[in-house]
Image 1: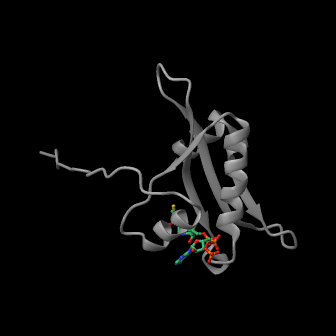
Image 2 (image 1 turned 180 degrees about the vertical axis):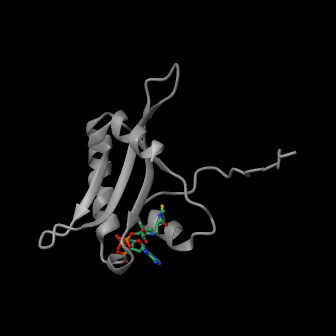
Length: 116
Ligand SMILES: CC(C)(COP(=O)(O)OP(=O)(O)OC[C@H]1O[C@@H](n2cnc3c(N)ncnc32)[C@H](O)[C@@H]1OP(=O)(O)O)[C@@H](O)C(=O)NCCC(=O)NCCS
């Protein structure tokens, strides 16, 4: 919830929902944020989070949400869009590949349990 509020406070125009016109129900959402690097004029559109109701998946909702988000990234001056997907989420990987994203770099996440 904190992350959601923080994204909304940062730029609500990059927090989108898809609504069923007939029922008014929310079918999905897409959240983004503009990132800037210190000492660089470049802006990045970070595609932060997306979700589509299970029964409405694979009917184009996610793609339409992303396309609108990308349009807004461009309007806000971003030149590159970035996204990260867990590699244990093959549908998510196929989804972002289908949107035209290419794997840019490989990161290895390490974890260490620091409980006593
Ligand atoms: C990933 C997710 C957002 C996709 O949304 P969606 O509305 O189902 O996607 P779309 O119908 O717009 O599909 C767009 C493309 O993604 C791919 N795709 C989507 N779901 C897929 C699946 N389950 N298996 C394989 N490919 C899939 C297809 O290539 C599709 O291209 P096509 O239209 O040429 O067939 C949705 O499945 C979801 O909410 N998943 C759970 C949350 C999640 O994993 N979010 C993080 C992903 S970054």
